[in-house]
Image 1 (cartoon, rainbow, N blue to C red):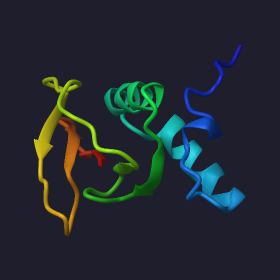
Image 2: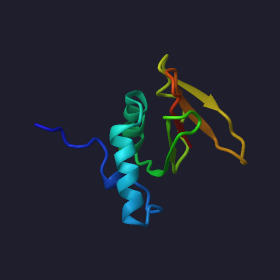
Image 3: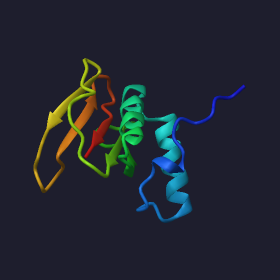
Length: 108
């Protein structure tokens, strides 16, 4: 019996206007995002944050990067998910990155 997907449309920001973008983002979140970052995204969504961007093959080929709508802190940092404060208005505020390769990113 298949498990229900971890992420549904409720986790996505309203910026995902097109149905195809929403479907692709959910597929990446549910099937390709590193499990450590899946748990962090789920915790952020539970606290009211929303996903407003999902992409692939950056920063590494085969990786997934997710952008959250609101800032987050370092409360989820671990040996498997390193927290980094960038706080550069040209890039982003902070991120979590996986220790494994390809490196997956969660950005806010």
